[in-house]
Amino acid sequence: MDDLRAGGTIGHLLVRTFQRYSQQEMLVGDGERLTYGQMARRTACMLAALQKLGLGEGQSIALLSRNRVDVLAACYAGYIGGMRITPLSPLTSDDDLAFMLEDGEIDALVVDDKVFAARGHTMRARVPRLRHLLSLGPLEGAADLMALAAGSEPQPLIPRAHPDDIAVIGYTGGTTGRPKGVVHTHATLLASAMMMAAEWEWPDELRLLVSTPVSHAAGVLALPCALLGGAFHMLPTFDAQMLLDTVERERITATFLVPVMIYRVVEMQKASQKDVSSLKTIFYGAAPMLPARLKEALDVFGPVFMQLYGQSEAPTCITWLGRRQHDLNRPEVLSSCGMPFADVQIALLDERNQEVDVGAIGEICIRGPHVMPGYWKRPEETALAFAGGWLHTGDMGRFDANGYLYIVERKKDMVISGGINVFPKEVEEVIASLPGVAQVAVVGLPDERWGEAVTAAVVPREGHTLDIQAIAAIVRERKGPIHEPKRVVFMNQLPLTPLGKVDKKTLRSQLKESK
Image (tube, rainbow, N blue to C red; front, side, top):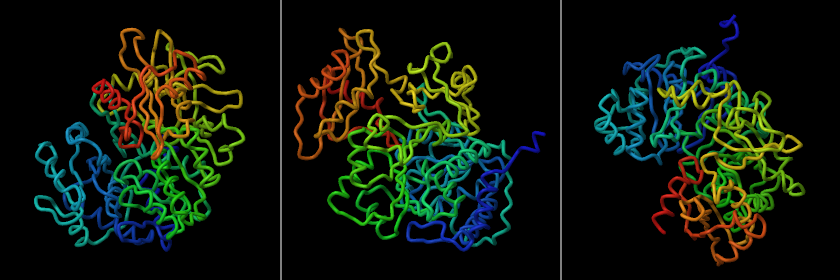
């Protein structure tokens, strides 16, 4: 009976979409435009090239590249051929990259020959177990994957993996200071893609634009796009003007941005007034949007925003707040992250793994078919993550009477000041309501009097002057003296993680050093 319900794999998803939409445009980027049929041939040649190098079922490939068609061809070849994929972020340090390649037992590293040649050679020297350095073009000391693919005869694409085989090991922050590998099987990754295709608010004519690295997190968005027969457009990097120009020229109907990108795009659109009437949905996630900035974005782009809450362990699909729920007449809802996906269970648990009372704050814990099987080679951390039979997200939240979920704070980011819990997001929302604030992040710093002192890092908007006393006063007025920042620091920019979230660990270090 287990075999009867086993289902397909990511390889099956790709092969069937290649066949189903063969004449439709699939990928646009780096000067290329490919149909689904052309991408099938490109993928088949790439798979043949990998097989010539002795790479096949059960072996592992890591990818480090700018956005281009061939990095997706290599990724798709790996999925279909039963190989394990590890996407790498260009923003990751060399020390962490080397750790990931060693820890993930990577057999081959694929790099962009134009941008990451030096890092490829560095990794080859630092990671002795790495069998192959492969490049997407000519590169001394590396096998040219493009040349090998060009000289290969494409064979029929036959998915080799099984649903329970590992499809991806993606690395995220670790409690020990080292990244930890989040394992996803073909079954969990396919479940995520199916949930995205079913419940995200996709336009009827789908032309999806991404500007974050497809060799990292953005690549997962190509899967539901393919399921729906859409065209996946890639920018080489994020640039607000380039994004708006592309939306106008290509009549883009959907895009995915993190909040800090949306803030820049809003400012640029105010200045450039591009024709963005084709844009039906702006998906956003990775971090919450400040309500004041979200209202501004709605004024500029209209009711096109859909918020997504997920994490690497349960990719992109825990809750969503749809376009209709982005209602300026219901400002309290704009602070929520929406309602659960249909196939996701959510419980708010206390420290004893018991559900909290309705309206009370607890840790957001979930169950669902897309939840990771565990962390790679981290049995103790896996056991902690799954305590009580739930995936513990590390986020603290509450439900309102209408079923909307509100994320109060990351559990580890909560500030205990004077023995009282202070949730930074509540302070951030107050400060963000001031008209001259572009960005704000609140953290706790060690303090002899308070235990932890509420500390606000504020990025002023261009042309605005902010007053520290006024910032402290408005927080005191709205939230009380415990929440009032004991220190306010003005910064030109906030440190960000590769996913566009504020890097509060780095921010704390910077603020400690600046005292």
